[in-house]
Image (tube, rainbow, N blue to C red; front, side, top):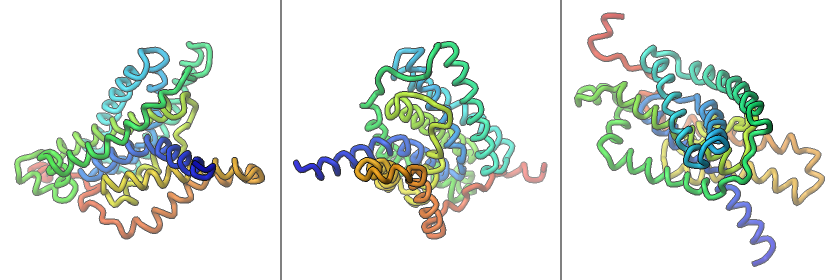
Length: 297
């Protein structure tokens, strides 16, 4: 195998590993948006998931405890968001941004407390390198749930025609709650995989906008679960490309801050080029008021 082939294979593998947390976050976001809920709090949930993942690994029984902590965190975040978005029918964009701001400050406070208790930084002895590839199981699993099960059909209907769901005897907000909880759990697991499987440590704001990239991937993939596979590979490759350029071209190190913005520039371009062409679920971000309660408000 030639040197260039080794480099290409290394970049491909690194891109797949880097994209693993985005796979979980994006598939979870597809579930939420297919049900009619825009979960813009993915960034904050991933950050908190990364923190509890490191906490579970350091203070618990390794990866199993980290995954359990992430699932519990995802359910808790989902319930909080459900109270605000579904019950109170607050603006979903404002709610997501506010949640991310709270999560950013809260994670740093908790990190400092844990660092003081442990007497050192939150760093693992060895990262679980086998963990990121497991994230790709979410793609066929979510696809099967959405397109081959009755609950998946109802979930998609809730994002397209809530009245049809109600006519079928289902509660729209209950369907959206289920999708929101599942999406939050996947986002938290994505954060856990990022810290425990990809990095092996936790630091403040370590997700650095990956949650927003996951939301952009959903639009880029046009809500197609299988398209998440190559779109996350594209964004993961963009992140690794700037590192590879700095390695093979030493002079590029002087422009390191500019190169680090490449994945985010790509995100902006994707949103500018593809959002207008994407077919958005018809009931996305539209709160549902059950019949009989409209007259009470």
